[in-house]
Image (cartoon, rainbow, N blue to C red; front, side, top):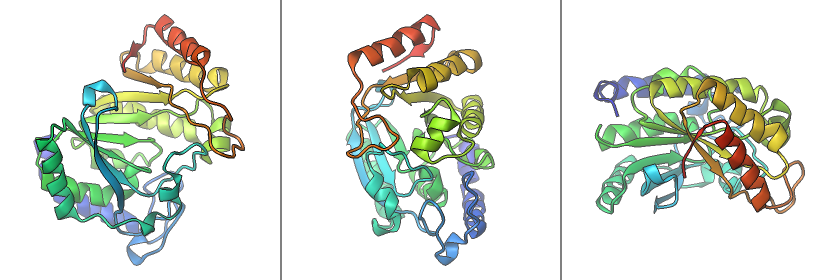
Length: 276
Protein backbone atom coordinates (compact mmCIF):
# COMPACT_ATOMS: atom_id res chain seq x y z
CA UNK A 1 0.00 0.00 0.00
CA UNK A 2 1.08 3.53 -0.71
CA UNK A 3 1.73 5.39 2.56
CA UNK A 4 -0.03 8.55 1.43
CA UNK A 5 -3.13 6.55 0.52
CA UNK A 6 -2.87 4.64 3.80
CA UNK A 7 -2.94 7.92 5.71
CA UNK A 8 -6.15 8.85 3.89
CA UNK A 9 -8.05 5.68 4.84
CA UNK A 10 -10.14 7.32 7.56
CA UNK A 11 -11.55 9.84 5.07
CA UNK A 12 -12.11 7.12 2.50
CA UNK A 13 -14.04 5.01 5.01
CA UNK A 14 -16.42 7.92 5.57
CA UNK A 15 -16.87 8.38 1.82
CA UNK A 16 -17.48 4.67 1.27
CA UNK A 17 -20.14 4.60 3.99
CA UNK A 18 -21.81 7.68 2.53
CA UNK A 19 -22.17 5.84 -0.78
CA UNK A 20 -24.15 3.13 1.02
CA UNK A 21 -26.94 5.61 1.77
CA UNK A 22 -27.94 5.35 -1.89
CA UNK A 23 -25.74 2.53 -3.06
CA UNK A 24 -24.22 2.86 -6.51
CA UNK A 25 -21.01 0.93 -5.92
CA UNK A 26 -21.68 -0.97 -9.13
CA UNK A 27 -23.40 -0.24 -12.46
CA UNK A 28 -26.70 -1.63 -11.21
CA UNK A 29 -27.15 1.56 -9.13
CA UNK A 30 -29.79 0.09 -6.84
CA UNK A 31 -29.78 3.33 -4.78
CA UNK A 32 -30.95 1.50 -1.65
CA UNK A 33 -29.95 2.74 1.80
CA UNK A 34 -27.83 -0.15 2.98
CA UNK A 35 -27.02 1.66 6.23
CA UNK A 36 -30.71 1.29 7.15
CA UNK A 37 -30.72 -2.40 6.29
CA UNK A 38 -32.09 -2.08 2.76
CA UNK A 39 -30.66 -4.50 0.22
CA UNK A 40 -30.32 -4.34 -3.54
CA UNK A 41 -29.22 -6.82 -6.18
CA UNK A 42 -26.17 -8.00 -4.22
CA UNK A 43 -28.26 -8.72 -1.10
CA UNK A 44 -25.89 -6.89 1.24
CA UNK A 45 -26.83 -4.43 3.96
CA UNK A 46 -24.45 -1.98 5.63
CA UNK A 47 -22.18 -4.59 7.21
CA UNK A 48 -19.32 -6.65 5.80
CA UNK A 49 -19.63 -10.45 5.99
CA UNK A 50 -16.91 -13.06 5.56
CA UNK A 51 -17.45 -16.76 5.03
CA UNK A 52 -13.87 -18.04 4.74
CA UNK A 53 -10.25 -17.16 5.32
CA UNK A 54 -7.35 -19.41 4.43
CA UNK A 55 -3.73 -19.56 3.36
CA UNK A 56 -3.83 -20.62 -0.28
CA UNK A 57 -0.85 -21.88 -2.33
CA UNK A 58 -2.63 -22.31 -5.67
CA UNK A 59 -3.27 -18.80 -6.98
CA UNK A 60 -1.00 -17.37 -9.66
CA UNK A 61 2.57 -18.16 -8.61
CA UNK A 62 3.72 -14.54 -8.20
CA UNK A 63 1.23 -13.93 -5.37
CA UNK A 64 1.62 -17.29 -3.57
CA UNK A 65 1.20 -18.16 -0.80
CA UNK A 66 -1.78 -15.87 -0.53
CA UNK A 67 -3.99 -15.17 2.47
CA UNK A 68 -7.52 -15.27 1.08
CA UNK A 69 -10.40 -13.47 2.79
CA UNK A 70 -13.78 -14.20 1.21
CA UNK A 71 -16.53 -11.57 1.38
CA UNK A 72 -20.15 -12.49 0.69
CA UNK A 73 -22.40 -10.82 -1.86
CA UNK A 74 -21.98 -10.35 -5.58
CA UNK A 75 -23.34 -8.11 -8.32
CA UNK A 76 -23.09 -10.85 -10.96
CA UNK A 77 -24.95 -14.14 -11.18
CA UNK A 78 -22.43 -16.37 -12.90
CA UNK A 79 -24.22 -19.62 -13.58
CA UNK A 80 -20.97 -21.50 -12.96
CA UNK A 81 -20.06 -19.75 -9.69
CA UNK A 82 -18.37 -22.04 -7.16
CA UNK A 83 -19.54 -20.06 -4.10
CA UNK A 84 -23.06 -19.17 -5.24
CA UNK A 85 -24.65 -20.14 -1.92
CA UNK A 86 -22.80 -17.31 -0.16
CA UNK A 87 -24.09 -14.79 -2.68
CA UNK A 88 -27.73 -15.85 -2.52
CA UNK A 89 -28.08 -15.01 1.19
CA UNK A 90 -24.94 -13.00 1.97
CA UNK A 91 -26.11 -11.64 5.32
CA UNK A 92 -26.40 -15.16 6.73
CA UNK A 93 -22.61 -15.43 6.97
CA UNK A 94 -20.74 -14.17 10.06
CA UNK A 95 -20.19 -10.44 10.19
CA UNK A 96 -16.51 -9.61 9.88
CA UNK A 97 -14.85 -8.80 13.20
CA UNK A 98 -12.22 -6.24 12.19
CA UNK A 99 -9.95 -6.80 15.20
CA UNK A 100 -10.02 -10.58 14.93
CA UNK A 101 -9.47 -10.53 11.17
CA UNK A 102 -6.49 -8.21 11.55
CA UNK A 103 -5.07 -10.73 14.01
CA UNK A 104 -5.61 -13.51 11.47
CA UNK A 105 -3.74 -11.47 8.87
CA UNK A 106 -0.77 -11.16 11.23
CA UNK A 107 -0.98 -14.90 11.94
CA UNK A 108 -1.06 -15.82 8.24
CA UNK A 109 1.92 -13.54 7.59
CA UNK A 110 3.76 -15.55 10.22
CA UNK A 111 2.84 -18.68 8.29
CA UNK A 112 4.42 -17.24 5.16
CA UNK A 113 1.61 -15.36 3.41
CA UNK A 114 3.14 -13.10 0.77
CA UNK A 115 -0.08 -11.29 -0.12
CA UNK A 116 -3.44 -10.39 1.38
CA UNK A 117 -6.06 -11.52 -1.14
CA UNK A 118 -9.53 -9.94 -0.94
CA UNK A 119 -12.17 -11.85 -2.88
CA UNK A 120 -15.74 -13.06 -2.80
CA UNK A 121 -18.35 -12.81 -4.24
CA UNK A 122 -17.32 -9.34 -5.26
CA UNK A 123 -15.25 -7.69 -2.53
CA UNK A 124 -15.73 -4.04 -3.55
CA UNK A 125 -19.38 -4.32 -2.50
CA UNK A 126 -17.97 -4.45 1.05
CA UNK A 127 -15.56 -1.59 0.40
CA UNK A 128 -16.23 0.16 3.72
CA UNK A 129 -15.33 -3.02 5.61
CA UNK A 130 -12.24 -3.59 3.50
CA UNK A 131 -11.01 -0.06 4.16
CA UNK A 132 -11.57 -0.49 7.89
CA UNK A 133 -9.62 -3.75 7.78
CA UNK A 134 -6.73 -2.24 5.82
CA UNK A 135 -6.49 0.56 8.36
CA UNK A 136 -5.54 -2.10 10.94
CA UNK A 137 -2.91 -4.04 9.00
CA UNK A 138 -0.31 -1.41 8.10
CA UNK A 139 1.03 -0.10 4.79
CA UNK A 140 3.65 -2.83 4.45
CA UNK A 141 0.94 -5.35 3.48
CA UNK A 142 0.80 -6.35 -0.19
CA UNK A 143 -2.89 -6.18 -1.04
CA UNK A 144 -4.48 -8.13 -3.90
CA UNK A 145 -8.00 -7.26 -5.01
CA UNK A 146 -9.55 -10.28 -6.71
CA UNK A 147 -12.42 -8.57 -8.52
CA UNK A 148 -14.88 -9.13 -11.34
CA UNK A 149 -14.18 -5.45 -12.22
CA UNK A 150 -17.91 -4.76 -12.65
CA UNK A 151 -17.98 -1.72 -10.41
CA UNK A 152 -18.60 2.00 -10.69
CA UNK A 153 -15.70 4.10 -11.96
CA UNK A 154 -16.05 6.37 -8.94
CA UNK A 155 -14.47 3.62 -6.85
CA UNK A 156 -11.13 4.07 -8.58
CA UNK A 157 -10.26 7.07 -6.42
CA UNK A 158 -11.17 5.19 -3.23
CA UNK A 159 -9.02 2.22 -4.21
CA UNK A 160 -6.06 4.17 -5.58
CA UNK A 161 -2.83 3.52 -3.72
CA UNK A 162 -4.33 0.85 -1.47
CA UNK A 163 -4.31 -2.01 -3.97
CA UNK A 164 -0.92 -3.34 -4.99
CA UNK A 165 -2.19 -5.97 -7.42
CA UNK A 166 -5.53 -6.20 -9.20
CA UNK A 167 -6.38 -9.84 -9.92
CA UNK A 168 -8.93 -8.88 -12.54
CA UNK A 169 -11.45 -11.32 -14.02
CA UNK A 170 -12.36 -10.89 -17.69
CA UNK A 171 -15.16 -13.40 -18.01
CA UNK A 172 -16.95 -12.80 -21.32
CA UNK A 173 -15.89 -11.21 -24.58
CA UNK A 174 -19.29 -9.83 -25.54
CA UNK A 175 -22.42 -8.47 -23.90
CA UNK A 176 -24.68 -11.27 -25.14
CA UNK A 177 -22.74 -13.99 -23.33
CA UNK A 178 -22.42 -11.74 -20.28
CA UNK A 179 -26.15 -11.17 -20.24
CA UNK A 180 -26.91 -14.87 -20.62
CA UNK A 181 -24.42 -16.27 -18.12
CA UNK A 182 -23.67 -13.38 -15.73
CA UNK A 183 -26.92 -11.36 -15.85
CA UNK A 184 -24.82 -8.26 -16.53
CA UNK A 185 -25.79 -5.37 -18.81
CA UNK A 186 -23.19 -3.17 -20.50
CA UNK A 187 -20.60 -5.61 -19.19
CA UNK A 188 -17.87 -5.14 -21.77
CA UNK A 189 -17.54 -1.36 -21.56
CA UNK A 190 -17.64 -1.32 -17.76
CA UNK A 191 -14.93 -3.85 -17.16
CA UNK A 192 -12.71 -2.72 -20.04
CA UNK A 193 -12.73 0.82 -18.63
CA UNK A 194 -11.98 -0.44 -15.12
CA UNK A 195 -9.22 -2.79 -16.27
CA UNK A 196 -7.52 0.01 -18.19
CA UNK A 197 -7.82 2.32 -15.20
CA UNK A 198 -6.41 -0.32 -12.84
CA UNK A 199 -3.49 -1.02 -15.19
CA UNK A 200 -2.50 2.64 -14.99
CA UNK A 201 -2.64 2.76 -11.17
CA UNK A 202 -1.24 -0.57 -9.97
CA UNK A 203 0.14 -3.91 -11.02
CA UNK A 204 -2.48 -6.12 -12.64
CA UNK A 205 -2.94 -9.80 -13.40
CA UNK A 206 -5.67 -10.31 -15.96
CA UNK A 207 -7.40 -13.64 -15.45
CA UNK A 208 -9.65 -15.31 -18.01
CA UNK A 209 -11.43 -18.56 -17.25
CA UNK A 210 -11.68 -20.34 -20.59
CA UNK A 211 -15.25 -21.48 -21.20
CA UNK A 212 -15.83 -24.61 -23.32
CA UNK A 213 -17.32 -23.69 -26.69
CA UNK A 214 -16.72 -19.95 -26.18
CA UNK A 215 -13.41 -19.44 -27.95
CA UNK A 216 -14.73 -17.42 -30.91
CA UNK A 217 -17.24 -15.35 -28.94
CA UNK A 218 -15.31 -14.79 -25.70
CA UNK A 219 -11.69 -15.92 -25.48
CA UNK A 220 -10.58 -14.73 -28.91
CA UNK A 221 -12.01 -11.18 -28.65
CA UNK A 222 -10.64 -10.86 -25.10
CA UNK A 223 -7.14 -11.84 -26.25
CA UNK A 224 -7.36 -9.48 -29.22
CA UNK A 225 -8.39 -6.63 -26.92
CA UNK A 226 -5.51 -7.36 -24.56
CA UNK A 227 -3.05 -7.39 -27.45
CA UNK A 228 -4.34 -4.04 -28.67
CA UNK A 229 -4.79 -2.18 -25.37
CA UNK A 230 -2.51 -3.70 -22.68
CA UNK A 231 -0.17 -6.11 -24.50
CA UNK A 232 2.35 -6.38 -21.65
CA UNK A 233 -0.16 -7.23 -18.94
CA UNK A 234 0.36 -10.44 -16.98
CA UNK A 235 -2.24 -12.79 -18.44
CA UNK A 236 -3.51 -15.88 -16.64
CA UNK A 237 -5.56 -18.29 -18.74
CA UNK A 238 -7.41 -20.64 -16.42
CA UNK A 239 -8.55 -24.12 -17.39
CA UNK A 240 -10.43 -25.08 -14.20
CA UNK A 241 -14.00 -24.44 -15.40
CA UNK A 242 -16.55 -26.60 -13.60
CA UNK A 243 -19.96 -26.87 -15.30
CA UNK A 244 -23.01 -26.19 -13.13
CA UNK A 245 -25.10 -29.15 -12.03
CA UNK A 246 -28.05 -27.99 -14.14
CA UNK A 247 -26.68 -25.69 -16.85
CA UNK A 248 -29.06 -23.35 -18.64
CA UNK A 249 -26.86 -20.96 -20.62
CA UNK A 250 -23.44 -21.98 -19.30
CA UNK A 251 -21.42 -24.79 -20.92
CA UNK A 252 -22.46 -28.26 -19.83
CA UNK A 253 -19.03 -29.87 -20.13
CA UNK A 254 -15.54 -29.51 -18.69
CA UNK A 255 -12.79 -27.87 -20.71
CA UNK A 256 -10.85 -30.40 -22.74
CA UNK A 257 -7.18 -30.32 -23.67
CA UNK A 258 -7.86 -29.09 -27.20
CA UNK A 259 -9.89 -26.09 -25.98
CA UNK A 260 -7.04 -25.05 -23.72
CA UNK A 261 -4.30 -25.56 -26.29
CA UNK A 262 -6.14 -23.49 -28.90
CA UNK A 263 -6.37 -20.58 -26.47
CA UNK A 264 -2.72 -20.85 -25.42
CA UNK A 265 -1.48 -21.00 -29.01
CA UNK A 266 -3.59 -18.00 -29.98
CA UNK A 267 -2.27 -15.99 -27.01
CA UNK A 268 1.32 -16.93 -27.84
CA UNK A 269 0.86 -15.94 -31.46
CA UNK A 270 -0.23 -12.51 -30.17
CA UNK A 271 2.96 -12.45 -28.05
CA UNK A 272 1.00 -11.99 -24.86
CA UNK A 273 2.66 -12.26 -21.44
CA UNK A 274 1.30 -15.56 -20.17
CA UNK A 275 1.84 -16.49 -16.53
CA UNK A 276 0.80 -19.39 -14.33
